[in-house]
Length: 464
Image (cartoon, rainbow, N blue to C red; front, side):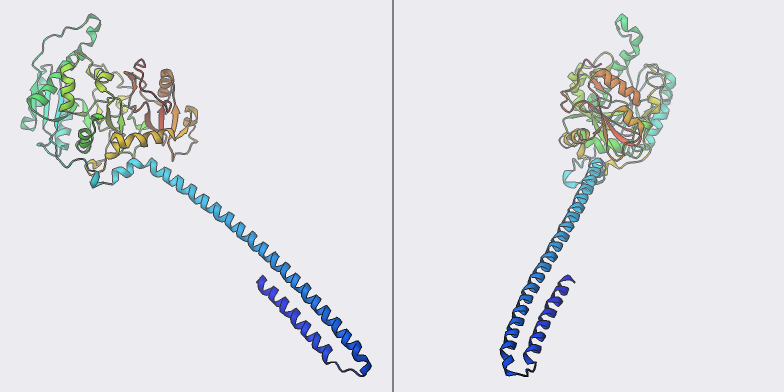
């Protein structure tokens, strides 16, 4: 529009000049002696017209300059707006990418990658149920038999200690649905005087050693799931172990698959995280799978008591990890036992049992292999926002991203764990559910990492 206006002004000035010129040129002159004067006037008019043209030209150039400056200003403003929009889009993309990173386990679990499949073999896995003097073993056995997809693929072996006849009758009532074996050594055990009250732990260790030798050496199974007689199991209990079996076989940095989350209370887990699995340096137990190779390593040096704490020591663990779920696939209903209900009232009875069937065998779980897992895990933990307990409890933080609470000492960890409702004890310096010193849990709708420094140098065995 501005360019058209300038052109119109320029054309109008030209026309006016030409008309003026010819009007004066053709004007009738009465007297000859005035011709010289008229010619002089015409030359004067021509000079003024030229001067006017020059002025008009300058005006047009000035207007064009103004227009160019305005166009450049508008272009600059447009560039600023465009750059702002691009920056906003980039930030949005960054946030979306961060959200995708947080969901990496969901994405990996929901997409099967055939080229990364670990094995197509259908393993035969023995289910070894430890029993003693509780007739409630029926509750556990009923669930195992009802939920197992195949009796051939998951043969159940019930190993009984104690010579408790009512329990024997319950087990034998299942007939050919299971195999019943009995621990033959019922003799007294030589126990140090200071540990007389812990006699039950010595008997349990003896029973475990004998029964595992039976499963792997006498029956010849290559893999076994260990279950105790006071456990409920989830609908996808067998699917969970089948899906994770290839990981245990392939990854030498793993030495067990556990169905248990020590911090799996309802208020500490993601209720929608049925598919979420993690690596942990802490041996969880309470429904776990091991291979014959691991047993051949552990069996010859099996302890006389406290087998679960023994197996957590560095010389047995050898920096190996287990797989554990967000939501437990087992839950204990055995309040009364050798431990006299230790932890039961405060923790164990609140463990949330998964109630949704997850098709683990159809998922790509290779993200749990050490080479894939560690980098992603460390990045998520140490790129997360640092908060303290008060900030976390205030519930004012955004829930879309994980947060981190640092700890630097044993007592600092225990204090924070108690405030959050986590189990605060250590075994051989390892906190429950910890991986690389980090305890991961869910709190008021957000993922939280209770973590040491990024330059963490390993577990301190004196933290026990």
